Image (cartoon, rainbow, N blue to C red; front, side, top):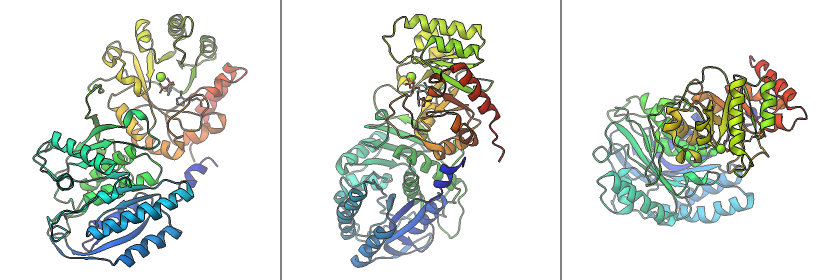
Amino acid sequence: MANLELTLSALKPVVWSIAGSDSGGGAGIQADLATMNDLACHACTVITTLTAQSSVAVNLVEPVSDEMLLAQLDTLLQDLPPKAIKIGLLANQHQIDLLSRWLALDLHDHMKRNGTEVAVILDPVMIASCGDRFDGDESRLDFTPFTGLLTLITPNAFELGELVGRTLDDMSQYHLAAKDLSQLLETNVLAKGGDKGPAWRANAAQDIFVCTRVTACSEMHQHRSFLLSSQRIPSNNNHGTGCTLSSAIASVMASGFVLHDAIAVAKAYVTAGIKHSYPVGEGPGPLSRTGWPNDLNDFPIISSLDDGPSLPSGIKFKAIDERLGLYPVVSQLSQLETLLRAGAKTIQLRIKDAGEPHLEDKIAQAITLGRDYQAKVFINDYWELALKYNAYGVHLGQEDLYDADLNRIADANLALGISSHSYFELLLASQIMPSYIALGHIFPTTTKVMPSAPQGLMKLQHYVNLFKGHYPLVAIGGIDASRIETVKLTGVDDVAVVRAVTESEQPGVAYQALSSAWEQADVSQ
Ligand SMILES: Cc1ncc(COP(=O)(O)OP(=O)(O)O)c(N)n1
Ligand SMILES: Cc1ncsc1CCOP(=O)(O)O
Ligand SMILES: [Mg+2]
């Protein structure tokens, strides 16, 4: 009952790895299988190439026949269609041409017939971690047949140079090259810096994410470039790092997360894997499989690489030392007063019509009422008025963060709540060190038109697992009496509600009933 959605999510999404076999067991198909299974997916394989490989050498590379390559693709598509595909080693130009044709015709046809979208992540493998190349004759492979067919390409620094046909010496050249590649192949690009020392910061593993277009993602994070910076783990055991990253991205996307989230989670997965990596042969050893990442220290710091506004760092907002509890969000002053009288200790005034008569007056009165009732009154959007009348706190959306004067809000000791709709936005919000982070919308809502899909309980559970104890977490969106218990089971700290209170004939009574249902929900099972 309570966990129907969690139970349903136990149906494993199917992910394909189209890649080469690494007889050494650390990279290629073997790394992909281990990663996909570790991230709760069902992994299928399409083997492109056999390699006689150890941790120190690649001694023989033998592509499978065209017939075998196509037979694997067609057989799987009949019965085990993918939610996401990772493509790794393609041994020669012929395989690139064959596979790109199959994606353009067969996979495209499948997606059209079933109304589904399949994420395709290409890791353009050219060289093994021992330094040996896979494409023997060293003539450059042409990846342009994949133009328009990929969700993401993930070259490392060496591969990016090969793909754009020039030497890349510093960060700005890498960024430019990643943007050029993005245009050339009409895809998003994750240009990885983990393999290169000199041009990249030695103490950090930094990747450049050039985002051109992504479905189900806020416009604010598209057509932009980001720098994703993780701690560099001092280890020689990096065999299969690129394979692990790309298959983790495919797995996380197959689980329903947007590309930005998949990249952040996969990067954390690789960081954790390198931390626990181990030697086996004489050369670089493989990564460990450490499950879905839940340690915030493993996640990257995200910053913007574009000109224009960026978010400040180094500010810390007022800590809220008591639970927010059941947190009503209202648009009328009269309702705010009714709920304060009914005992609400945290409440938000959310007036969306900037032309509302006496707006400033209403905000000033809400703040005064909050003081009278010793309650925490948050003002949505109007941070300048909240400052002017010294509110307890402000609630801002992600897009508002670029316009608001966050330093002034922190200096005036106002609490700050920030909305988030994904891992990526949660990470951005957490870098500002707010007083709480809202997660939404969890269930469908009619209160607000949302650009993202409802997050659902499975995603909420992942967010809670990562952020619990770091910031108070508030779930919002479609929460009512029937959902209080399932939401509480995730361990989220607090819940915000609009309609469940405001649409009641007696909002004060509805608040009291919901609030005690939240406080008393039995989550011991
Ligand atoms: C507690 C809480 N969570 C989320 C929101 C949404 O805020 P925002 O993203 O600023 O969107 P609008 O409310 O302004 O439409 C909220 N208000 N409160
Ligand atoms: C403002 C807002 N932000 C995310 S969901 C939401 C509305 C939640 O309203 P309801 O509780 O009526 O679904
Ligand atoms: Mg707002």
